[in-house]
Amino acid sequence: VQVNFHTPDGEKISIDAPEGESVMQVAVQNGIRWIVGECGGSLMCATCHVYVDPDNSQRLGVASDDEDEMLEAAASPRTECSRLSCQIRLGEADQGINIHLPPTQR
Ligand code: FES
Image (cartoon, rainbow, N blue to C red):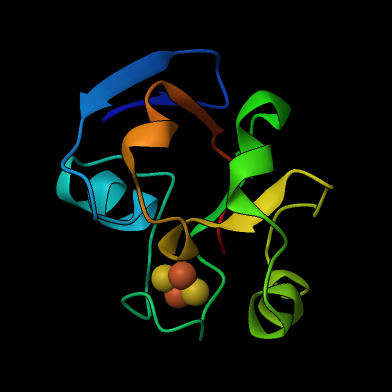
């Protein structure tokens, strides 16, 4: 599954990721430093905050109550595109997903 990370300074980093991984895992494993993933994906930190391109967000559905609550603690401003990337599990339908990285996670 191709994941396109867009850095805050406008760079695009494309990574070919295995299905079933979360966007947070893919970012951490590939040195995408804008995603921290401090809690390892257990909805305890909000340092995996990203902005999902509106074109790609439909398939993801709405955030769970726990994700929604944790997003309130995100360091960068929350928008309607905000999601926690550890909760985005990549599937075939996510091919070419565009993930915009926030300027800071702390
Ligand atoms: Fe901590 Fe996603 S990695 S909430």
